[in-house]
Length: 174
Image 1 (spheres, rainbow, N blue to C red):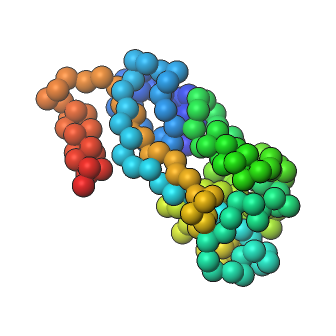
Image 2: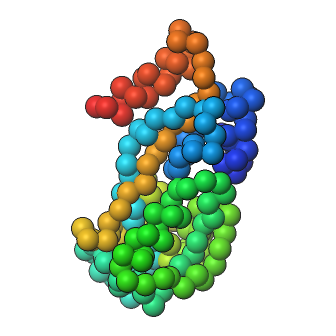
Image 3: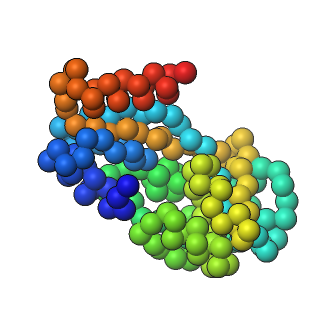
């Protein structure tokens, strides 16, 4: 597992140093790579556990977050989570106030745990910092998803990479 930014992942695939990577965006800027969306994952709100909005247990509307500071994690390259996030805020009728801007999603959750604001993350991350972060699902009107995409380089049909991609697609299909 590497902690590179996305453009580096894509370049490493193009150069055949990596066979495949999982990302939450598209490969529009890298037409020589192939991709398959494995699933669409719901987003959840991450709030400091002591925050008044963290005391409720039901789904939350994005409009309830209007006064809150958003901890933004940067999209390194191409369209992805950030674009969907801002579109959802605009649909809810406001532009969020940015409390912090960090390069990594895990850094955003760590700042939430420290009480520096809130963020919105893929649901699979809701197991992080559970002692200091409360995760709430978005209500039906506010909810949106982000793709989990398998990006891979071209490979012969009988290669281990092709078999891996086939297995991932089969698993995603059901």
